[in-house]
Image 1 (tube, rainbow, N blue to C red):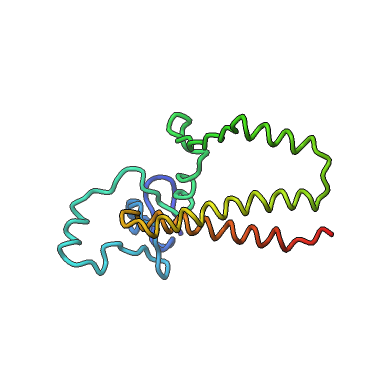
Image 2: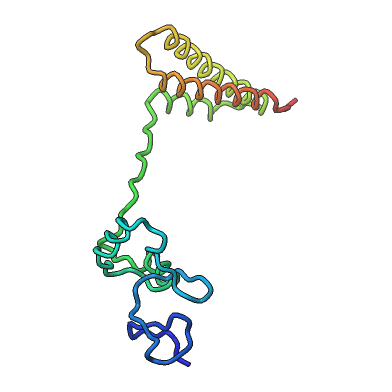
Length: 168
């Protein structure tokens, strides 16, 4: 019995003689132990095009090879694409000053909740106002109205969640 080897040849069913060995094609789809021809069932014009294009180098011969090719460990360091990092939003001097004042205050949880609610209500009313202005503006983009409306809805839900917390 012959088995697939790394010699560049494969026996489709894994049994039989050396004469049954076929060159590895890079096609690793099997049905009932036999390789599936990707061109099977194609329109004749497409099948001719598929046969005219030679198999590209680097096509995996098995699912394991495909997974190994996709693994970051096999990618050379110079080819790895670094994901761009989001720049940190810089806090303005006013924000730093307010946060510093809040941290110095000796407030209860209930008072902290009231401060948070006040800030969220302010943002929510600002967003509602922008949405209303954009609805009245004939030149406003529909996508921007939707984006601002979604943010206003999120702020409303945040406010409702904050209000539902019982700290008494």
